[in-house]
Length: 484
Image 1 (cartoon, rainbow, N blue to C red):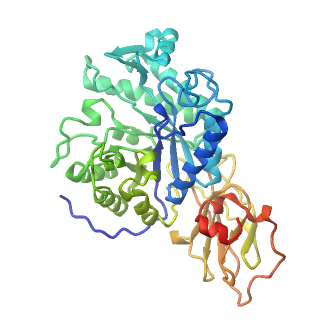
Image 2: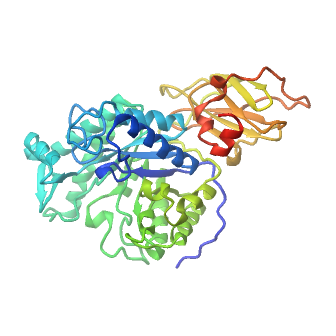
Image 3: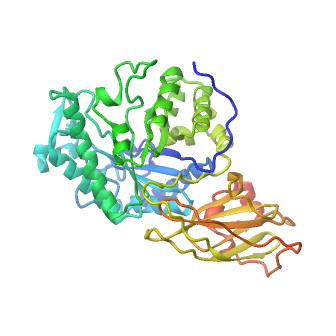
């Protein structure tokens, strides 16, 4: 067992992600009515926000079916209980908007090769329209990774999502050979087949919106290490997934290896991914579902030790799956609330664009007894992304340190104003920065230090004080105390 320190300080830049699974409705709201689904989704996202999650990967293409009105594939049955039935709203658009209101990124999780059980209607529909792309292994249906048209088809799906939605990332799942596939061509040639699909998707996405992150979730062990063997189950040889090669070639911005292991099956392989990151972002998938006595009966410490280790080594963490986190399985949610108490920003994509925006200007703070109303003038963007976002920092002392993550109170705000509640009689000092869609952050605008408190103004109206981004950072007790 590798040595682990139990001290892990908060990081300003760190991906804290969750997979929100829609297949079978296992993480998705159980209700099939539009209003109830929306309300349940808000509650789920509230919980994730309070747990410090800054990236939500929503399963968007499920199994040759989608959770948005696609011109290519039908609606998934998780939405209404019936294959192909319109839910009466656009769930993907809704969840993107709700994530953005809470300052979280939203990535469209695209299941690539699997297309469902052969007995399912979605498989039958796909096979009828695309017989040349369809392969079956037993009772399971797949797209043929060796057919060049598979990459073209998947690129169309990813381009459709990228073009139509203000998505922050495209996340590819199962971009590999099925483990039950009898690969009859040389392994190197098979890896080239999968890489060809990745290239086509990368080109389709980046031509439309170069700031959209492309990522995937490879098998948790890339290959055998010099001192630790993968046990035959690895990405490179077993399923012909050259994920580290995709980093070297610049085809991926992030990797989320599915590291659902313990002990020396976890730690050395996590370091291997980080050491071969080529400057990109590595986020380790954590198998928190194993905390359930029905799955693996892991202890809470099995997961928390891994989280400390990842933070010490500059690796992000992603929870599989959402419901095991929000259900507080074995106390994991309680731990995460403390571990990720300080907010974190997404590491910037400096390999794609590294010129930061100009700083905002003309910061103005107007103070009441219970809240501060901030406004500023927008910064200038150099990246040609569609809009800028703003981070707000606060401290009880002037000269706010924006390198300290605990001073970060609002992330990814789209407006150029915000109202922040505070304890009666407390004086807070503020700094505001701009970030572009690549994640590059500007210098801060701050008010000069002054011995005089900010000027008093009339109390704000309820509509002015109820600002959603900060609202989701407060507990129910804090909301009630402040009249929200």
